[in-house]
Image (tube, rainbow over all chains, first blue to last red; front, side, top):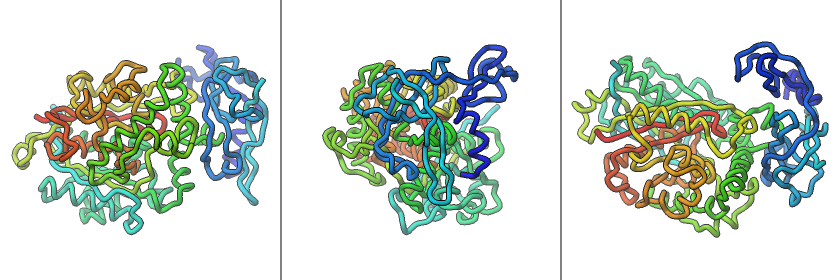
Length: 129
Length: 386
């Protein structure tokens, strides 16, 4: 991945920065230039909470090459307290303990590596609360 | 003032792992078959549905390449992309070209050459249909996205693991009667349940394969078809096309493909048809759960009842509404850019009564549903015998 492609997403991935529409209050992650709900183009920058619950999940047994050394791993859709939904891995959890609606905390974690000459990709993962 | 549009010929290339054939070979094979079937001497324009030749083979600019190798260079040609719905999109654009009177005879084709890369490379190319930054970055795969839809459907409606398997069993049964099918072997529910786990709860037999293949159809005005064609005149009477949010997690309801619901509404309205008027359908069963969601979203069955309907045999040849009598993506194969066009090929064969052992009795009205990604785009076509 090119450095610029990685670098420009850092505010979202490291700090969970999001946009709240000033007109309809809808929260967008990642940020957008126009609100799909009301068409407004003015937003307030906010930081999402690090608490949520599991909406649904899967366990990846055959993964993309960058994630092969992590299989089997859990990945799911997490709804944060603000109602925003994100896709992320669920770590530090026995795969058999995964359950829809389980409470989760969002942590800063290593996501993947790109080999000897590549960068290490960081971001968010969920862990059981 | 738009002209009505007919399909007057169809063609498929071989389908499978075609290591001896290139992208251009398979497209030209399908196109020549369609041109011969239609009995036309020239084509005025061509559209090519293709998802990702750039990644799969390193080749872009298919308009020029394929017009050149088909021996028609100088005619207008365009490659169109909407992930796995690229073929369906090409059909729409070909239809518009004829309906608007810009061209008389149009070749609509779809092609994907997927085995010039290894499985990892193909997985990477296919994943570009999802949100690269907020889905793929986290380690999700397409089987993973559909696995989450499956779990959500199972938890919300009580759809069972066995019912998912029955989609694959049925489609392989249909595919066993299709000489083109990549995997014509019949399978059992047990085979599916014991196959390798890919993304829980989906196993390898829930997933459509990686396929090299091309499909082509010839379109012209209905009035011209009546003059030059010796076969029943087959009309495209409804087209629906819609999009939805690209990331699955952005959608509130994971059990419905909203873009398909919307595209179906448009197509039904344009064709002045209702779900109960449809005699058979070719739908986008890229994964078993997809077929269950889609047969509900097209209005064939009440939401949540698609799994039971499949288990009851209602979607099997001879059932209430046969679905994927070609074998579907699961058994026939899924060369992504070709799939949407190949669905129209099957509908044409059925409506002209030449589908052989898998022929649907009294087939008068057929429907195709083709979608991109996890449902970020959908096309629905309704086709009927005049």
